[in-house]
Image 1 (cartoon, rainbow, N blue to C red):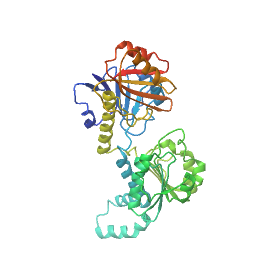
Image 2 (spheres, rainbow, N blue to C red):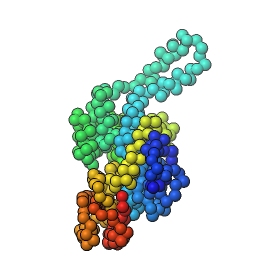
Image 3 (tube, helix red, strand yellow):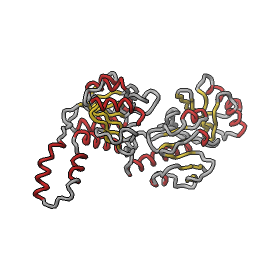
Image 4 (cartoon, one colour):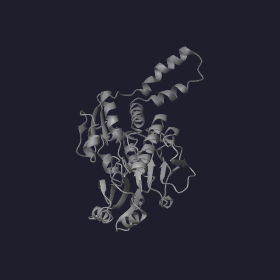
Length: 389
């Protein structure tokens, strides 16, 4: 029996994945083997001894103490790409709203609600519509900072609308690179991108290296009057520096998914209340993906889309499976296999992968491992945890 504690409102289609009797799932489940959450701010004090994995139904994991989890051998999953289309559609909406004063036009028409004469209404509308004149996106340059699951979709949609697209991503993986349209121009640094773009959209994760990425120095490189869109994370943009850039006209408009004091009523700022992944489809996709990854790890030991452990997958054999997490130091695997050899236990198959300071092993053996063996492996200096899968 696996205990899964949930936080936040997880889409029912995701919870339905735990349909068999091997799982107890709910907000009040004690001694959890796994946690399933969205935006709940989890503290290190809430990591119980039995906990083996945490699945975040979303991409960002800044609400999870990842370093503390790594120290204790707890795998942290996220769901990259599950909400990508939802965010992409909102970004494209933001591009259009930043180009055409649709919001201002709607507000103006609503102010005419007391006019009952249709001819008079049409006369006023025709006379005033020039106040809301915008510009078309076709032929304009969009700079995409971060070309992962969301950024690549935004790039494709912008190309389809006739925009020129340039991109910058220093950490682009090979898998992600395959998703980036060939027509996207590659920039060697963000400064070069900022200088050319009529619109800049941010799609990088919030890391120490990206916090304050768009600061006073970066904003100084922007094309005067350009538009900045932030549907990634609020701290990526230095709000104080942005306010100055808006006042000087260096930035013509700011559209973001993160309301902050001081910008809410600014005439050239449009802020939405964290709507990026707020669609039924995105919430369901994230919940299903998070649940499946959690179940797969607990049942087979395989890891996919972890932010702190290596990706590991091995076909199940007819033997018995042991999962071992250890510090990424030399000689660890040799000590484990030596202990198995000393007990005349045959290794059928194994895989060993590492990521930063953590290494993870799946070992299939012919005979059932007893508690003595597990205790012996756990006693090796550098081993963090051991479990029979």
